[in-house]
Image (tube, rainbow, N blue to C red; front, top):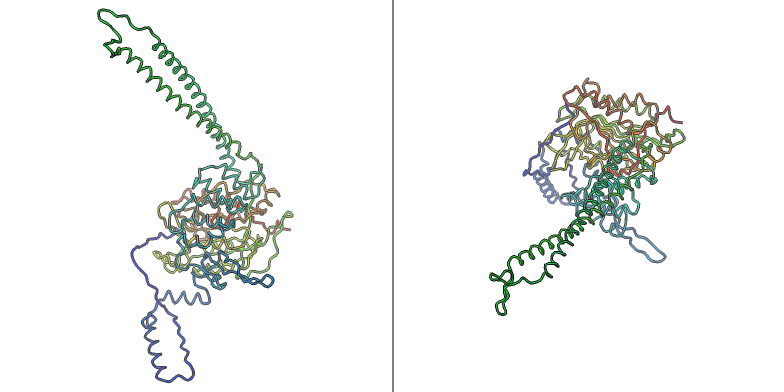
Length: 623
């Protein structure tokens, strides 16, 4: 069985809001109202209720079940992240009272409303709406606002992405030292979006974001092979450019010699003595004031002049090409010089976690080898028993086993959501924002159905809660909603372990440059460097592809491999080291199955990944 549902969409249909079960109306009349007016109002009210679709007998079992389950929760719309414009603050300076400018923030729709803020409720997919919130502050020089404007242009929001404008705004924010903008700008250079593809420039921006020194390589050690490959390619291109320069110099010299020879021939033809007359005169013939040129001599001179003109044109063209090739060679040499020096050490990860009741307990930060890693929390979601989709075999047993390991071996405080609907998941993510601090670590484990929709080259992934329907998006949780919450949560590092179809779509595209080394030994310097920056990383069970549910009805391939690695480990484990072991095991075990499976690890740029790392620290290694 696969952990995925394919989406089918119908365009052209319309749905209308309907007042469902549980409609309550309270009528408050003044104490001295006459009976006639009371009856008239009551009749009017009854007609309004009936016309609105709140008449008795209209039942929706699913809606009733959802309403009972979600008693006390906010609506899903209230938990979405919006671009909110807060009102200005009233301040007093001496005897003068004044109002400060309005302030843009990203928060939930509910929080924005509570704080008296303004946001567009029905037009969030229009880039102009978001731009109106952030553009003013961006133009004033606010680095975070400039980065948000860049992200708006990159995402497109209702239109095609404008990568050129995104790069411009990322550049302005990156120049001010904003790590998130430096990561975003580096990604555009890595992929060649809106700028010329340049891996060296991309890597340098990533290094700046991580705070690395100029001679430190803090990224994937495997990527040094690509750097070496790029260095080899640049060297080969430089050699070819030098050969072209030499060849062009030779051609130009030959053409100049040919041009000079042609000039001499023309000059010689001009100085030749006139032809002698004879009975049948040859050459020019003079009749009165009219001179008839000798056709042979005239044609020869014209041919020489034509050849000379062609030689001049070819020399001019080659000289221009020569200058271009020299400039190209110089640029290649500069790029080669800018490549980082190879080092044997690489980057570091970071950890995250969440608690069990959404009222997170006070926890002692984990310390190992003299390094403080912070507190660890985990949100564990196992969706197995679906109301409208095919049930799965193992998500709950997978989630319970992962939860037990994180609690007992790694000291996590966990929140477990078995068979969670949309609201439970969104509420949990929202509550984490209020309780997790900037030095804490959060791990989110999701096992359940996933889906993917595609429009052109753009793909959008979803987590499917237990109340999701096959062909309706109403309860599907868009990956962009998840990444918005991950961005808003203050945790230093967040690791998402997603065991569902198309789980890799939570991150836009893979980037080897943004991921740390798989080196087996972690130095203290490497660990401390990985803890300095924000980390937002997803390890998915199969990238942007379908994956299998359990093979033995106890655990999925991904979960079993993950559990085995967590059980065997006794030291500090960085997220990429965890991924390397899990991915190798999953690939090997899936070779003989009908659906080969290849896990992926990607940075979640939309959630603010800034080059940091996530670490798992067993309690036996703490102290």
